[in-house]
Image (tube, rainbow, N blue to C red; front, side):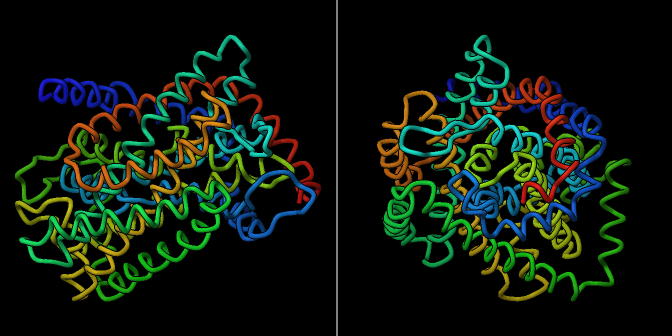
Amino acid sequence: MQALSSWIDSVSSFVWGPFVLIPLLVLVGLILTIGLKFLAFRKTMYAFGVMWRGRKAHPEHEGELTPFRALMTSLAATVGTGNIVGVATAILLGGPGAVFWMWVTALVGMSTKFCEATLAVRFREVTPHGSFVGGPMYYIKNGLGENWKWLATLFAIFGAVASFGIGNMAQANSITSNVAHVLVSQENTQTASYIVAGILFLLTSIIVVGGVKRIGAVAGTLVPIMAVIYVLSGLVILLIKIDQVPQAFWTIVESAFTGHAAAGGFVGSTIIMAIRYGVARGLFSNEAGLGSSPMAHATAIVKHPVKQGLLGMIDPFIDTIIVCSISGLVIMVSGQWTNEGMSAGVLTQTAFDSILPGSRWIVVISLVLFAYSTILGWCVYGERCIIYLLGERAALPFRIFFTCVVPVGSLMKLSLVWNLSDLFNGLMAIPNLIALVLLLPVVIKLTKEYFDAPQKYE
């Protein structure tokens, strides 16, 4: 088993390394950004207006969730442990400059997500029971044609497997371990873990078995609340240390191009390391290019695909530019990142608590809520992949099985699960990126059509 785990870890490291996914994701993002004439930068504020109006849907338009709830379902999966632990990992291993490259990844990823969400709505299908299903497997099959169905099938297989790893077991384990260690003494953590796993199983079963509409309703309430609480807490801390914020920004930007010693120098950080860990953690957090979030956006009740594409576009902005930046800046102004031996798992908690005593509880609660919302979002993704592969009759059995896996992930050691889920997460991106580049002309045409008369599609 150890040999298998090591082999999977090596393959995963190669896929996510500087020679495969990192340059591929950034390159495709740049191609899409240029092809769309920097639409993501020109229409950011417009997109937030569309999001606000998307809280309600037109009764005559087709879909399952309001545009806002479709976005929240997507954010439920993307705003997760990567926003707290992932940022800390990037800083510890890549230095402060890694945060800058996370920003770059998000800005480039906005165009990627715009294309993903637009294509998801354009090529979605309606099942016999009235469910709206879409995502890379559908825009590969319906957009590129029958000769590409094998690529769509590969994506669906990779996505279904990844949903049980990174979207289920890893998140459940993170919740259980954090709650158990915070609430009880070391001697009682095993008992507490069983109790937390049982509660998590019950909560998940109540929501997940209800399907995408119930998940969307919960996500539409939970995601805004948890994000606002975390961001406001971070802003309070930054106001307390307002005199140090400009220097923190400067250190981040300077380190992105000069390199910087991370964690007191015990891990020497170069420019290459800053880029590698910044891009990798940024992509892990906002999932731009992986092909996961378009499966949520495909459920939106909209008249024109570009309208939901605009909401998809602000997904990385909220996830990385806002939420991840709060984590990164608090870590920087606290100075805790320079302490030798500091682990990523506790760095953000320690940073918050060192400036505002007691605020580590906000980080712990946020981590739990972020991880739980990720479980809900990835249930939708896994279900969509299974529906594509096996038909709609497999949806309910999948939800039941997905729910039963939650307590298993809560209680088991996850080194192999993490490596497998990282690998399949990365493999999802390759079919999706190929489709995005080939279907860019379709997105450009739809974008021109929409912006020629946007009021027509309200």
